[in-house]
Length: 475
Image (cartoon, rainbow, N blue to C red; front, side, top):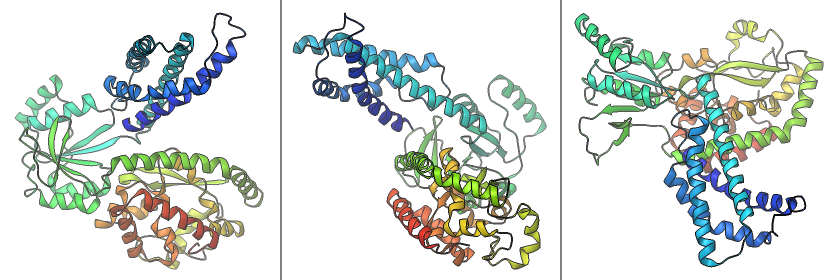
């Protein structure tokens, strides 16, 4: 995310060039002390020549590193003020050395506009971060495995102190003795936070299936992958990263990867896509694509909403709790295509289920209305999920999110489909969806995760257009 803000700053610096020039040019009739502005191409060329210096100073003052915690406005502004003060000095020296004549008020106005734009961007990002943290959707759920040792306690203390995104859900391992518990409580009150003991190691697999877990940290006496082999296999089967505490402060050049998190070294076993820059770009493209899609499709969506209201009455939208990234629950939205009491009728139709596995699907579902059948055939009923993409619960492309009851009945390797954000479209949808059985569906989801790339997403989106136009596999 810091790299994305770095790119955003570069775009703001470029965008401020015409803004500053036009403001200065148009204010001259009302402010006589302002001198003539240079031609826009000349000013733009001079400003763009300074762009590498801007970006170097941005990195030097670390004004783009704002995602590790919540910041006050003064804390956001101070690095920017230092950055712009330094830039003003550099520009002044450059103008003096080159004897290049340019309006100083234009330069100050240009710097001021960049400062305001950059500060506004950071404040908006912090507001969004605060909102997502309040919802809990950005929380990274951490499970600790091991005894209540000093290494575990110090790590928990650092996590709580340094990372607002992290939530320690508890510790699995041997329960402390009464004497140790008393000492531990005293120690906890003085330094380390209290970490709930939530069961023995035997409960590890059950807990991964029933709780949201994003990362598992292994501490003594389970800090050896050979000793915790069964638990590690559970993590690998479900796609949950497993990190093992290492007793050496030196970097180790060996596979699996060594990761330094919260100033502690860990061996990292992570089956989820590791191309973090590409994943960050995927998220940006998702949000931008959803926003553009909502704008372009808003007339169609309004028309569909009106038709539903006339033919079926309220509600127009249908929301259902689904499972997202690593089992997070969220409300997924669709245009209503069924009768009002469709959920109550579901249990009476279980014998007619045509899909293998725990998933319920009927090609000619009697609960679907005539309009609803048209919406489903054309996939128009899925359009409100663009709002889910916009708020970050879903992606444009990814494994299809299932309802909680169905997902809870999926066990073992198939649950690794939760290790990537769910999507509106995916390999399953463009490969025949309702014509594909459950086992092949799960294999397609894992194939997508293991071979994911931005190019793959682009190909799936193009195939999605064809599938929507032909209605292939829709029901």
